[in-house]
Amino acid sequence: MGLHELVQLEAGPRIGRDIPVRLRKRTARLRRLDDVLGGGDTYRVYVGEYQATKALIRDGSYTEETGRSLLSVLAEQAQQAGWAAFDAGRHADASGLYEASHQAAVAAGDDALAGNALAFLAYQKVSTSRTAGVETAVQSCRTAGPGAPAGVRALLHGRLAWAYAAAGNVSETERALSTSEAVLGETNGVPVPDWAAWDGNGLQIMTARCWTELRRPLRAIPVLEDVLARYDDTHARDKSLYLSWLADSYLAAGEIEQAATTAGRVLELSAGVASVRPRRRIAPVLQGLSAHRTVPAVAEALDRAAV
Image 1 (tube, rainbow, N blue to C red):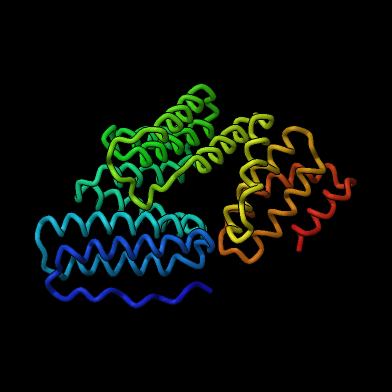
Image 2 (tube, rainbow, N blue to C red):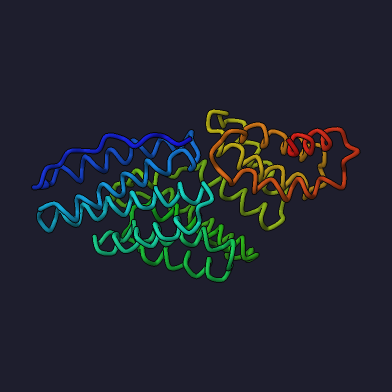
């Protein structure tokens, strides 16, 4: 069962320049729900926020500047709702919201948000068309441009690296990861928006995910082990996802018992989390482990999965 809809912000028929500021702060606060809840719990809340802002834009009166600010907030909210939809397995809803976000960001003149909308679309596309995923990820970086905040550029190049890794392109993956790392150390004086709060941990995780996808487990394992040692169980969805990549790398490295034990932790942490992704991510690992059922840890993990 998801969260109930929240009490909406009262703006009145004439919308002042303070309303987009208040809405953006509210959006930032609500984004924290995604740290501890899955998209199945948050989707209705995020969609409700998006629809409420859409109604403000449609029915309210405001200056041109305030209108652009409202459209920028709308784009941000659509991305958050799209991410929740994706996490909950509602892929058609996610695509529609990402497209709507891109349109709103372009209309607002917000290149960074427009680029991020494309990055979300690319992330979704790689599962069905790796070529389309890479093309959209490249476009996302170009759309944001060199004038975007450093954190935004680092985030988008990290997602570009993932698209290249999914396509099996080692050299371009390394190039995108190097760019992301270099950009993280820059300061161009442009404030980083809340939605792009990406740091070294985020880059480490993305790096390890890429090496797992490229079947380079010896590169991925130490990075994931280091990050996960500092990751609290309260972030159950994300931790279970990162553990799934660790289990995958253990299996690729032939460490069967460790892969099984880690897979069991994924199943334990993700139980009751309103996200389809951890279970889907660990399924191929469990399939790979099924040939080793005589190993006690494997049998335990497979039995847990069957419950």
